[in-house]
Length: 48
Image (cartoon, rainbow, N blue to C red; front, top):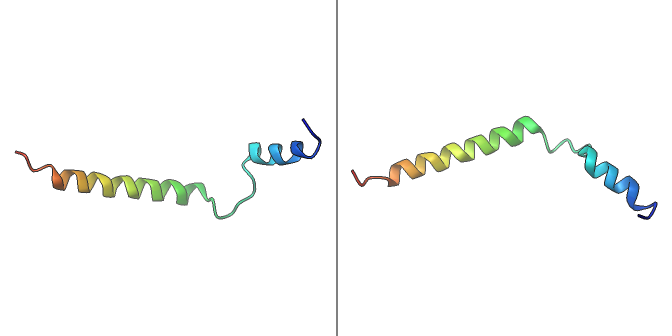
């Protein structure tokens, strides 16, 4: 492995320092998207 690739790979392994990738915001957005999909799926399930 070249010496230039080692710092880049270690930065990727640590997760980086991206403020835009807030775990609470990402998880909350995914949870909201799943709730919307669940709502849509239950609205279209009218076979009873």
